[in-house]
Image (cartoon, rainbow, N blue to C red; front, side):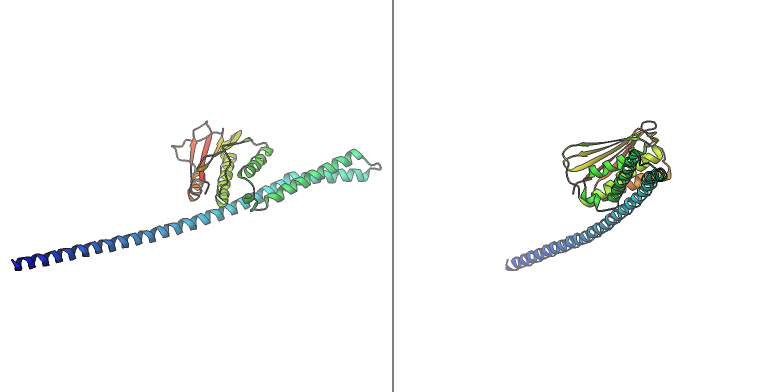
Length: 262
């Protein structure tokens, strides 16, 4: 009996030791797997962060490029013409022996208009301005600029209680809206464009809708259109949101972008 008891004790100790070893191995394996996953997640986060920073920089450069294009057009088409007219009026007065107060008033008005246009242009030169003013304000300015060309009519609607959007996300979102507007001007053949800012609890939902020719979502879009749509979706994704496109031939196009506030 003592021999049997001793054998049972040894088996119990051996079994207990084996269980402890297996338990230890399992813990070490789990820790190793967790560490590898943590390292992988860290790498993924770093990749995402790098891509996000690149998207912000690209958006800044594109906004700057478009701003310079607008400035060039405004200087040539508006400020230049107004100042040329003022110059002609001054030459007419210079050749006249009499002081024409009515023409003098017109000259002052034209010069004042040119100065006001230059002030508006100067505002657009500052990239930081997008961070300082509300999204509504900068989108309103963009739509007003389009309306002044007479190409199409525009509208802007705000629904819900306005909430602040993280600065870099606002930059990316504004660039996406600009892309939507430019695509409409280039391809949609629309007469009306409407932007809606819907402030929901967790996200800001922006809808850009036109009454243009639309396109078949099931068909293959032109290469430049497809790349443009994919670019908008990618930027929204990098900002933690998403975008979708709804369109039918002769029924216009609607683009819906959702971006979280933080």
